[in-house]
Length: 143
Image 1 (cartoon, helix red, strand yellow):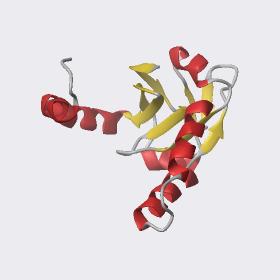
Image 2 (tube, one colour):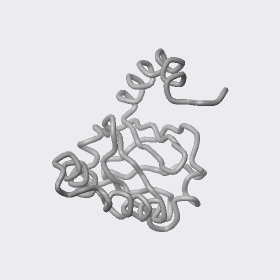
Image 3 (tube, helix red, strand yellow):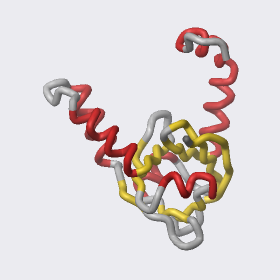
Image 4 (cartoon, one colour):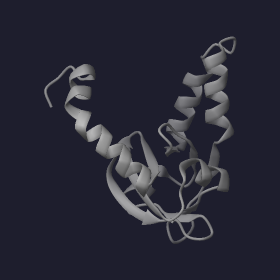
């Protein structure tokens, strides 16, 4: 399971260190794609295959299903870590998530998310204020 928050920089070549705690669970090959809320989603190969199977069941006759699968799969890139534990993030993905220098890498259960520091801080501030209300609406157990 992925959890925690880490801060790293993207270098001028588009490379970024993946936190050591995430490397083993990501494995030798993993997938990075466009995520929600202007971040990138990073999936270990097994999780990606499970997600792919779920998305294959969406009805291609539905406009929203076609749009979502196009958005999600067209941005997907198979990646590997270099010997320093860095991943090279493709230019279109860096543009989408506005990754220019400082980044926040977070663990979110079955995936990792990569955020621009500024977008993450704005998102966190907004979400933090509504956290209790959000939890009340979706969680059935006491935290």
